[in-house]
Image (tube, rainbow, N blue to C red; front, side, top):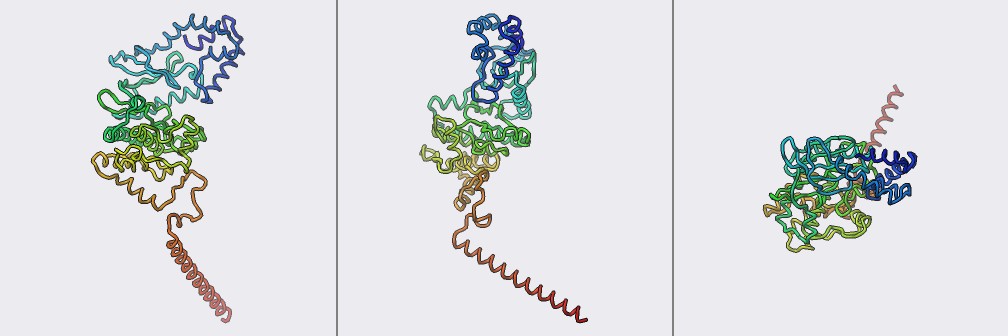
Length: 422
C-alpha cells in the first residue's frame, strides 16, 4: 500500500477531514524542505498535530503496515533480500537482479519525500548523474525508474567497509595505505571532472574498501554538473556538504563551486585518515564550519600530529586544504602527480612550487570582499625596496609621457600658425 492509499484509508474511515490531511502534508513538506529535522512519516506528523490519537495511529500501522512494506519493496525484475541501511533521502536494500542473477543495491526514495517534487527531481538527478560515470573506483549505476509511485535507483552492490567504519574503531592509516586509497579516490574524481561533475560530499563515509582491496567512491546524492547554473542559483547561500570535510566556499554557499571543493574535502578526509581526527574538531556543526573559513585559525599540519608521516605528505594535504582555492591543486590530475611522487618516495613537485609562491604572497580568499588589497595587482608580494623601485619606474615613465605630450602640443600649435600665415 502506497502512502496515497494510506491517505485514502484515513479519509474513508472518517478519522480526519480532507482539509486537515492536506494541512498536515503541507506542514511535513515544509519541515522536509528546511532540512532542520529528519524526515517524518505522515502518521507521526498527524499525531503531533493532534489530528490523530496515538492509539488510532498504532491501529493503522498494525492494519496496513505489513501490506505497505510488502508492496513498497516490489520492483519488477528485482527480488528484495534484506535492508542494508537508511539515509537522509532513502532506504537501501540488497536485492537480486533476476534477469542476470546478480546481487545489486536498490535505493528507494522515502515516502515522506516522494510527495515533494523537488526531492523526486533531486533523486532522479542522482541516478542521471551516476549514469554518466563508468570507472572502477566509482559505485556504478545500473538502473532507475518509478513503479506505483515508488522512485528507485539500482547500483552495483559493493561489499566492504567504509573509511568511517575503520576510523570509528580507532584506526590511524599508515602513509602507504592512505596514499593508495586517496590516489584511487583522486582517479575517480578525475573521471567525474572530465565529465563536468563535482561530487560535493567527499568524506570517509562515502569511500568504501571492498573485500578484494579495491576502493569505491559512493553516494552522488549531492553531485552537480559544473555547468548547471540553474541549480547553482537555486542553491545560492546554502552550505551543502558535511561539516568536518566541507570546503570554505561551500560553507559560504558560493554558486561557482568547482572541482577544487572536492579536492579540499578529500584533503580533509586524508587528514582524518592519517591523524585519527578531523582537521577542525568540534561538536557543534556550525562552529566546525566556521573554522574552515576563519583565517585566524591555523590548520595544524598532519605531520606535526603524526610524526611518522613525511613532510611531503603534510605539504600535499596543506595544498589540498588551502582556504584560498586558487592556492589548491587546480584539478585532480595535478594532485595525482604529487600522490604518485610520494608513493615513489619522491618530493611533491606541484605542492612545493605552490609553497614557494605562497611564501611571497599573503593568503587571501577570492570569495571574500577583501580579495584585492590596497597594493593592487602589481603590488602583491613585493618587498618595500621593490615597491620603491617600481614606483620610480612608473614615475619616470609618466614623466616621459608628459614631455612627449608637451612636444606634440607645441608641434601642433606651430603647424596651425604656419597654416594661418599662408
